[in-house]
Image 1 (tube, rainbow, N blue to C red):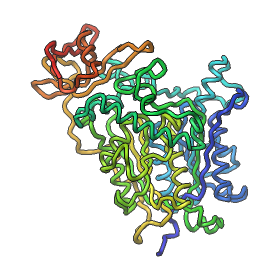
Image 2 (cartoon, rainbow, N blue to C red):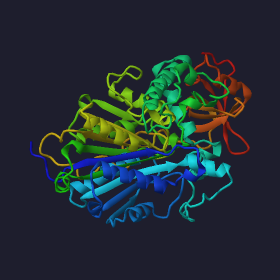
Image 3 (cartoon, rainbow, N blue to C red):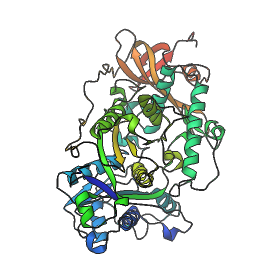
Image 4 (cartoon, rainbow, N blue to C red):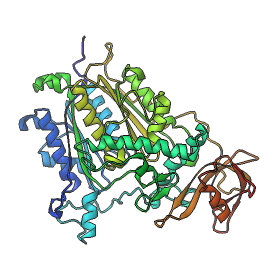
Length: 516
């Protein structure tokens, strides 16, 4: 089989976890990333002399620390002088997207030897904060113009109809999708909880056996422990207790080395290290959840998977192993539903790492670890073809990447561009009424709980009965809240009335006679 000389291949992978007892060992993200890159270079048998040929460094931006120019800092630590210095945007789709982009540059001859890497030190940062040592001694100076990224900071979203109702965080949006899919699938709340708990119990087994996992070697969590609400596993936003939420306080880093077949031969990298990057694709939906077509499917997730497969000249049946991003159970559920895979008894792996709750969130960089593990498994011929689905935002951004120990079929080279548009197109979205009034019904919802285990506020996306227009609201009274947290009631589809309050928020009231 003729393989084009510029065919992109991954020739080196490296990753590490920095879990220890001494504060003096709490290294910053740049240091962890540099170590991971060194491990990847060593894996590829690339010498210090050949390292000078690195012409592209792409870095997934960390949540932990805001750097003025992290790729440049990594280049300095490696004593490399690349032409391409790229910082991705914040989003869990970035590992797959940056690898795909690096592969394209290699395929068109713009690059010969590329590094793609990322890492977090959120656990270390928390330890320094607890010790009253901020900024951490010895860490690089942060970018004074940058704002610290936090998944719990609503102010980053600006002023809009969502934030006026305190809605917009990942802990709100993913549960809204879960609840909508539950209603669409005609599950009871108990059936839905059991399904999620069984899924995450299986993922926990995977993570505990993964040496780079934050929970490597720790005691197991069964479905009962994951699905039962307790003091230590408190409800965050219905239907997800703590152990169904991503765990981000980790120190993890991972890196990939990508080159061409021609340059790998020039560097004399053994062929048993080569893993072919077959193709990738990514797209996004609107940032604002209320401006999406529905809450029981994800067009960007589905299109990303389908286009990556088509770009790689593969079908879904050709894939032997998947790693579906899993910050919350809903992401692998939507992926499995789209591909027709069983969720709790899949015939193929749907996670190589165990998800962000058990493996560790690693900020934006989780899927870089999935790519490195997929490469290791493919090298061993455990699987022939693998697909990594990376997810960012709140089911907002998706990028899929197909890898194989065999070159792509046919004579066509790597796709020259992302086959998908930046934003999904031709999707109908109902008109939005920022000031809502009149009879209405619930399209989806979630209830946020406080730290004492009491329901605090409900977030509701609904439809005006007369027009079909969509609105955002909070609960209007205690009776409505009581029904929204009733485990034997399905709130989605129930009717009520919405009014605007004096503070400008829409408040939704369920009809008192509403029944299951």
